[in-house]
Length: 148
Image (cartoon, rainbow, N blue to C red; front, side, top):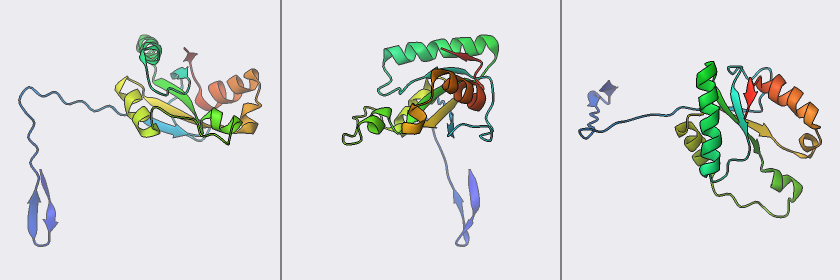
């Protein structure tokens, strides 16, 4: 790979991979505060939760999301909440997290998630009824086609 002149001389970068080395890159789009102006693909098959630790149960749930998305030619999505709801309800104690956000983001991408929706969580949001949450967030802001 050749890069432009730097200080009067060309810079060359060579990347050599070991033989029989497969390289894959997983990409995820993070949508913070989903809403009508967040400009993301609509119709995602969605899973919701905190996804801290990403254990086998999470992997099974995400596997089902990926399966349904493939069958219907839809993007995959996960809805999570920040800050952690426990920190809103018990502000004196910061909740223990197994997985930092960036690691969670990378692992969700590796598992096949296309879109990571990060909904701001505060006391006002916590007071929404189930009907309001579905109408305003799941259908209105995210435009999910299915929820697993």
